[in-house]
Length: 180
Image (cartoon, rainbow, N blue to C red; front, top):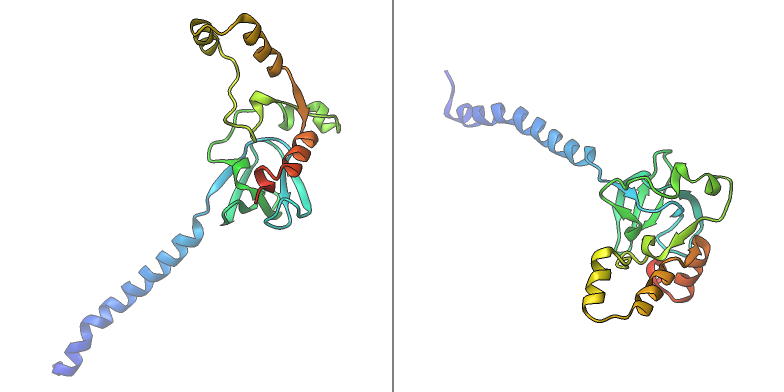
C-alpha cells in the first residue's frame, strides 16, 4: 500500500519521462530548421566579415542556395553548398529561386573570365527600376510624352555597365552594401 507521501510523487514519476522527451524534441526541432535563401545575381560576394570592405571569399552564382546562420541589419551570415561560411548583403538574396537568365552556368563568357554586362533594368541594386513596357509606353503617349522622350528612354535602356563598374559606383557613393 502506498503512503500519502509516496502517492504525492507517483504522478510526477510518470510525467518526468514525457517532459524529458518533449524538451529534447523541442530543442532539436529548433536546430533542425534553417532558412534557405537564393542568390539573386551572379557575382554576389561571399565576404569574410559583415562589411562590404571585407575580403571576398568567393563569388556566388545566381540561384545558388545558401543556408542562413545569422541575420544582422544589413548582412546575413550564410553557408554555401560547398560548406564555406561568410557574409552576404541581405538585398542580394531572395526567398525564391530566381529563373536562370544571364550569368550563372549559362554565362560562358563570364566563366571564361569575360566581362559580364548588366542592363539598368536587370540590376538587382536598382531593383525598383522598371523598363519601358508596352503598357507604360502607351500610358506615356496618352499623357502627351513626346516620341523623342520615349526614344530617349529606350536608348537609356541599352546602356550597360560591368559588375565592376557597378561595384565602384556603389562604393564611391556609399550606396547599397557600402551605405552607412
